[in-house]
Length: 178
Ligand SMILES: CC(C)(COP(=O)(O)OP(=O)(O)OC[C@H]1O[C@@H](n2cnc3c(N)ncnc32)[C@H](O)[C@@H]1OP(=O)(O)O)[C@@H](O)C(=O)NCCC(=O)NCCS
Image (cartoon, rainbow, N blue to C red; front, side, top):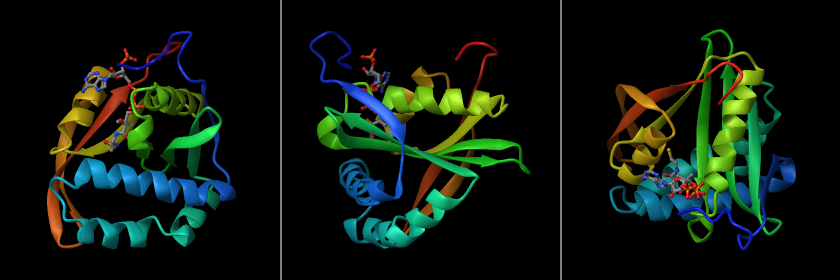
């Protein structure tokens, strides 16, 4: 259960900056190991992380006008992040990446980040938000479904020498609402 009562540690979100890159790498890696370690060997995770989550790759994404990133803070310290892409030509808005550090999950940070994704997508006049999730990641797939996502496509996803099934889905945005 998320802690959202008066005793919950204070949580907030803000846009990412270049200075957040080491925290994005650290949070992502710890969450990957815990979430994907059961079905993807760590060496394969490392290959993919080194390539797509290097400081250089994240810096390039940070500077792209089509990408936006947000940090979630717990008691003022970075504990989660979400990266979105706005693909105008394809008419698609994606949550490309959303991770909360394993020690900070269940405090409402993921929900805050996802609410921000819905808000930013609506503001940019998209009618839905797309994302992908590995089908073995059953807990998060169930969480997305509880948020209103419907999975409509399936595609293989390769990390190093391992290929897994990847579900792709969207959540419609209601005008004037969430
Ligand atoms: C998925 C993730 C981003 C969610 O972030 P989080 O901060 O742990 O989530 P929250 O604390 O905001 O929880 C949100 C709510 O969903 C609920 N919830 C969690 N899992 C659920 C599930 N499987 N089904 C239904 N509800 C669920 C929680 O109880 C909470 O409800 P509440 O607010 O009514 O108490 C985070 O757990 C994470 O990083 N997981 C591992 C990595 C991952 O899978 N990332 C996505 C890859 S595609």
